[in-house]
Length: 308
Image 1: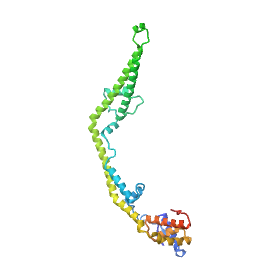
Image 2: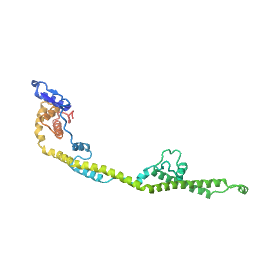
Image 3: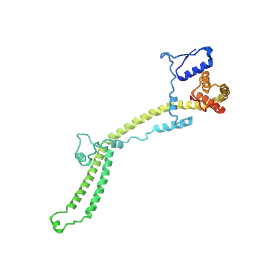
């Protein structure tokens, strides 16, 4: 009369047992164990948790084998290794304080736009410099076209008194555009010079980053290799389970039909059968499926139990 319970399912089983024993045995006493007396739940193996987490990746042993092979090949190499040039271009283009020179002063005063508060990276600075150079080259070409087609509309007398101000303005605009091109070219040259000077350090940093990533991938590959045999064995056991229980349907089908004809609910039948044997989770699912199939055959109820 003393049964220890830890879950709602166990409580439902106790109620079904009470109905099965009848009133002559009296009520079933449920004793909730104390914290010290509670038996520790069996730990779920890492392989079972792994299979549950990767249900979308594989369901059979063959699919799991292919998945493990693909993961091992992926973890064997770096998909996108860090490159020294890429790390350099991700760094800031501005030099450290106290190391500024004349070209940096020119860039800060003439090249960098006023709204650009945050410093750009090396790669962004090079791209911006090339884009600006292309725009200034277009401006230079347009100004040269205007200079070539310019005609002084003034009279001879006014030409003697002074130079053509419109032509001077065009020439100043051309000189300004050429100066901007040279400033941006000097920025690119300065960054390329810095790259040549700092290249060994960036190559070492890239090698260290790649080594760290390879180490992490190696650890993940070792973990998968350790789980592989257990996971494949569990999947093989699950696939072989229906074959070993070929008499499961015929063994219980007629008994379930008789109980249903007596008016016993599918839930009570399922719980009563669980009290007779310690079924695995897969066997519980198969038993529930069998009861639902029998219900569908006799049209005695819904195709799925309400508590499923």
